[in-house]
Image 1: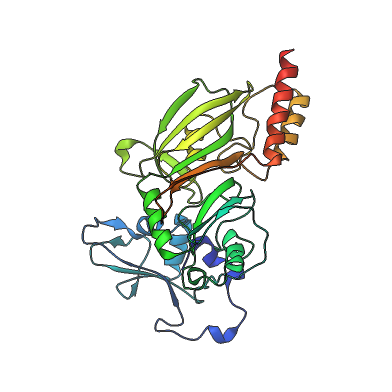
Image 2 (image 1 turned 90 degrees about the vertical axis):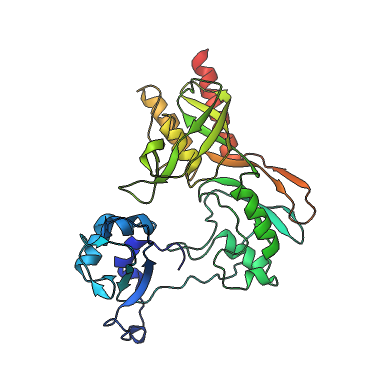
Length: 361
């Protein structure tokens, strides 16, 4: 299973219309969706908290509802949400319908190919395109398009639900992405991303006037404890999250907003978005992290209309993956790529320049 959203398990739209699929299994008609063999070093922990830390997008209330319905199994017996997980336990999440397999359907979708050879392809992804199929996004993704374009390649004809992927950028983030064409290339490039020897530089428009011309943001990142669909920054001594470092440099100031360059030292989910929010400067028009509200500026209706017009230019956060660098998996040559801001992003910046200049006159 790939990227299952636990909240979707109680959505009838995810269930099959074919009654023949609901044949009785070994557990009174229930089907296994998740299984966890508890590590020997696991301390005693409520099962709802345990599963929330293990299942992406799992809300605690949904887990508790599943337990009340008898869908949470520990060592072949249903348990309540206050059951304490212990070392050696076998925990399973069972539901009344079989897991939905995510199949990659090749689709003839135009792509902006920046570079390609026998080992890899570098794509300039538009904002609004999801990188790979997942629950809620079965078609129209970058991988669907690549599976069509490279249908003859073995890597796109196997069982891998994310063929060739070594990194991702968010749906509403535009910019450069490298995809491997062979398993050897995938392993080689993935190792560079893991050891942080790759190069990634973004351009972001953030709310507010950054105090320093450049700086470093350090903060451990993990999923928000209340909302698993977003990330959060946790203190170093909390024991929660992964080490994350973002370097930023101011490119242009607009008073109420700042155009900044962000370089990733690490690559965590939503890293730039949550790190900038953490220091009080969420990305402009970022719906998940408070950037789609007026955070700075005046109360005049003319300004409010200006901001709404700016919001309408972008599908989401003002973030573009501008530079990408890595060593070629075969030749060892250092590859560097650069992409211009999309037209709508460039228009957004021009509007801020015009507004700022008019305000200063």
